[in-house]
Image (tube, rainbow, N blue to C red; front, side, top):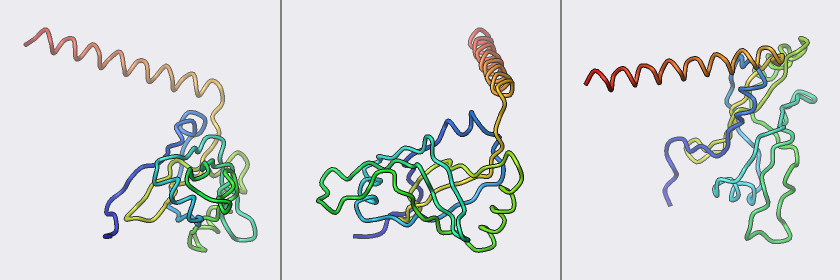
Length: 158
C-alpha cells in the first residue's frame, strides 16, 4: 500500500489559543505504540490539559489523551501515558532556555499525520490574564459584527 501524502489533521488544542499568547512554533515527531497509531488514524485524540516537559535533555508530551484502540488486545496502550517527542538537540536546548523564564510553558497545538508520520505542533506560550481573554473576545466579536455589516451592505448594493 502506498504511503499517504500531505497533511491530515487529527486533533487541535483550541483552548491553548484562548489561554495563551502563542510564540515560537515547532514540529516534533511522536514516539507511539502500534495501537496508538491505529487509534489516531481513526481520528480519536484530545489535547486539552496536555503540556510538554523537558526532562534530562528529552522532550515529553504529557496529559494527551489517545483512547484505547477498539480492536486492540491485552497489549493495548495506556490512554494518558507520557510520549516522547522527537526534536533536535538544539531545539530542545532552546525550548529549555525559553521555559526557564517565568510565565512561559510549552503547549501542544495540534496532532496530525504528515506524509504518513505522526507529528505534533508545539509552541512556547505565555499565559493570558483574565482581562486579556476578555479583550480578545471583545475584539473577535467586533470583527464579526464588522463582517456582518459588510456582507449586509454588499447584499443591498446588488
